[in-house]
Image (tube, rainbow, N blue to C red; front, side, top):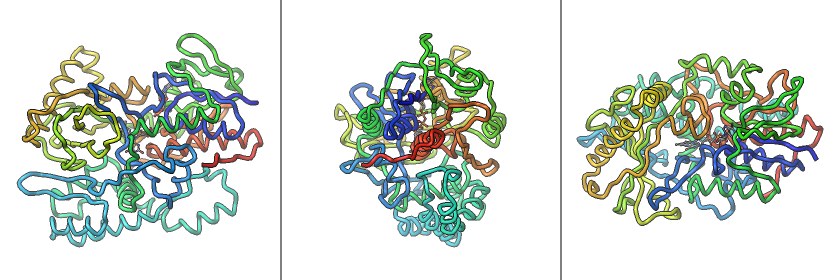
Length: 499
Ligand SMILES: Cc1cc2nc3c(=O)[nH]c(=O)nc-3n(C[C@H](O)[C@H](O)[C@H](O)COP(=O)(O)OP(=O)(O)OC[C@H]3O[C@@H](n4cnc5c(N)ncnc54)[C@H](O)[C@@H]3O)c2cc1C
């Protein structure tokens, strides 16, 4: 039986393991951290569960093409409850200037028109586009280069219109799209809801999924999801080794033979799949000896291929917050100074999930979304010795902002954790503390890397960094694709595990 080493125990690594085990391979997942999950994690602090990932998981609707994949890896089981966020986000600009992004599209249109009647035409166009995106449901069960002619023709006939729309909206930034709106608050909300720089297509895709009831949050959070997937992998006979950081991928005559761990031990295999962040894999694990044009081009061009990261204060609240909105975007009372002045904050309320551990308190996360520059700023703070001091300063500032927004909770709030891009970098070995692949900007090209490195045999790249634009669906897809490619190379018919 062929042995396969999978580097990284995130959702793509565990998925690759599940599909490979189901196809008769002996696999071992090597994960650097003490738990699996990668970016899809949750943890406990001061008696409370903190969710570190899922804001919306697309593909939860049984009609979605991604749904069978979630079922195959047990991310969603028959009895998994999914929470649907009817009110995606409240935008509260103060003095009554407030509106909600509802998941019900008719309600959303009515809400926006009532808030900004001067933009009725633009709002109707916006909602029409979202409705159109609800229907975009591309095949995700195999990579297009592995489809036969019949399958390719079917995609071409059924999805030609979708591709034209996707291509067109991918070339427009959210900011440019809002130039047709007059209302400054609506402009602000639409252009900044996704991380700055995401193209219109990414925003419409997200809104399409949310309004089609195809994006929800499985109860039990990110940790619950990861535990189910890990369990699925182990139950198929997979082996997961944690605290096993790979230092080098071993190559002989352009053929991968195994890996060397940080502790010096070598592990040999017939194939190696790397699901680690791609920059770490190419530069550190493969010692920059092999080039991937599509990735190099992105790593060298931060302007067109930026990343997305967070600075977040996690706050515990001793009072019940279940009547408060799930998510609020509001102006900061005093701009928060990081690498720039942040004049809006985002407050997320986790009271929707009562199945997770809690000492009776509820949890808020107050987040500033940034990019490469935010990372450089925190990196500099680390290097010049002010990191802890800055964490404290910004944490206190975000706490004061939360108190100012919810004054009736002021005496019940306590910071219990603080996350910066350095946290993600350390935890995931990821580029600039990013947790979701390259941002798909209007200036950038769409990324679909096959996972094959020219000139390097018995090796597959997988994970969210090789398919636009990251996220959990991309992770499971790329794990599945890596198994399909190995089966094809070994002349085996790929079979998906039943559920
Ligand atoms: C705050 C936050 C919010 C998010 N919200 C959403 C959301 O709402 N919806 C959504 O779809 N996605 C969301 N994501 C993104 C999602 O979590 C990721 O896209 C997905 O988990 C990526 O999976 P992956 O397996 O490809 O990569 P990763 O999770 O990065 O897994 C790679 C693994 O490799 C390990 N590793 C790295 N280097 C080594 C090494 N040298 N040796 C051994 N192991 C190594 C890492 O520890 C990690 O476990 C969010 C992420 C975060 C952090």
